[in-house]
Image (cartoon, rainbow, N blue to C red; front, side, top):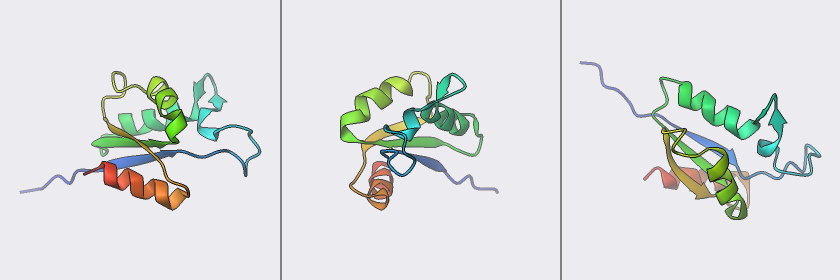
Length: 99
């Protein structure tokens, strides 16, 4: 009997875009009419192998992120959580949100 392993995607959206010189969070940049965040979450939403999505964002951007990618539209989103100081801290926050 084949056992199905649950798979979750952690979307890191807590960046600043500083290295890119964007002047804003690069996940909020528009790409052909949609934000990079919307396109990223949508890709995981459409992927049959992904069972859940955790979106990690800056505390002060969480409300904006929830509006951009609402659970009502992206029903695979299981959690939104605040990120940490560094990228690896944000990954850990995303992993904790899976529990």
